[in-house]
Structures are given as structure tokens and as C-alpha cells.
Image 1 (cartoon, rainbow, N blue to C red):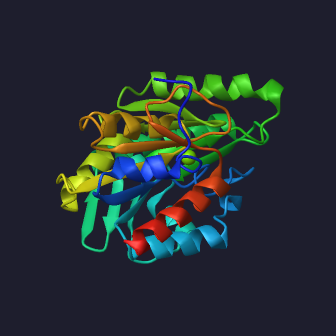
Image 2: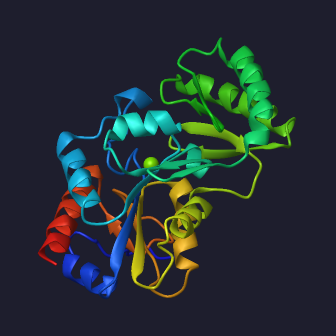
Length: 266
Ligand SMILES: [Mg+2]
């Protein structure tokens, strides 16, 4: 962990040197990484320039999106054909020749928790309970500060009485997921294997902005020295398992543009 993480944009030449002649495979988070965080999930739209860069990159190297969003929601927001999409933090994987779901046997537990949460949270203004196939997100960005502890209490009670689920957090949200040893990091490793990208000629690069992405940074770090590259998108330097940083979604898109130019130049 370090507080001084070099910028993959400002130190682009050092970044490309770290690829050491290997082909990149890109794994991209969506919210806060390529789309600015918005008051409601449907308002977090990726700029058209970023979409064009992703489309360009997808012709130059493998590109996958890995998000906490529901799979169909994610694919609809990105709207680039031919990519691999991993929704619900990697529990729900789909690509041109790929389909995998993890934790299907936990769907009744999620249904039960969803009913419980809606019953307890419907009266708290601004609370948004969002059911994804393999998770329930409780968004609190629109909740008045004095009401936030009540939301936290209700979510905690729901998960404490349901050991088959576990709670994770994000920016202004709680999330309940199957209590399985599965996360974005394990999903990335599974995708590398499923896509035949686990050889030494490929270097996986993961861009993400929050705690759930740290699982992916750690998974890549666990592949061995320089075997994978993590890039944390963050406006304020913070401890991270990623070796590189970018400032915000605009800079992430600019970085990807430079990477596309560099790859196209061969
Ligand atoms: Mg994110």
C-alpha cells in the first residue's frame, strides 16, 4: 500500500514500459471510472468520447467491463457490442462466447431480503432499493443525513438475520450479495482463464475507483510481480493495492485514448 501512486496518464511512457511488450487485456469498472458518479444510477452516463475510445480499443485488445451493476443494465449503459460484461460484481458473466453465473442457488435468499428491505425502507424518503440479479443495492445518496442511521440499521438487521448473504459497501450505498468467496477479483481471474488470456504474453490491466475494485487490484497483484496492472481512479490519493492512478473519469478516458493510439502505432 502506498499514498503516492504514479499517474498512468502523466507518466504514460513509464506505464507503457511496464507492459514490457505484452498485449494488454483491459478490465474496466463503469461508475466513477468511465462515468462520473450521479445522484441516481440511471443518470451516470458515459460520455460519447469515452464510448468511442472503448470501441476503438476493443479492436486493438480484449476489453471487459466489470461492475456492480446488473448485467443487462451495465451492457445497456456501455452499449458497445462484442465486449465481455461482468455484472453484479462478477457473479453474472457474459461475452460473445461466454456465459457463466455464480450463486444461482442464492436467488431465493436475495428475494427474501429484498422483501424485508422494501418493507422496512419504503417509509424513509430518498432511499432507493435496487434489485440486481445477484445483489441488492440500497442507495443512500438522496437520503437526508438525519435519516441515514435508520437506513444503516435496517440493512444491518436484514443481513445479520441472513447468514447466507453478506454486506459490502460503496460510495453512498450498502449492498447485499451471496455470502460466497466471489468478488470482482475472482471474476477477473476466471475471465482471464475462460478467455485464454492467462498466459505470459498478456498483461491484464484493471481500472476501478472504489473498495470493490481493490479485490481486483489484489487479485492481479497476487499473480506475481508485474504480472498484472491495477489503476485506481481517485481524486484524492488514498491507500490502494493498485500500482498506478488516474484522477477522474475524464482522465481515464484520455488515458485510454492514448493507450489506443500507442497500441495502434504498434
Ligand atoms: Mg466504480
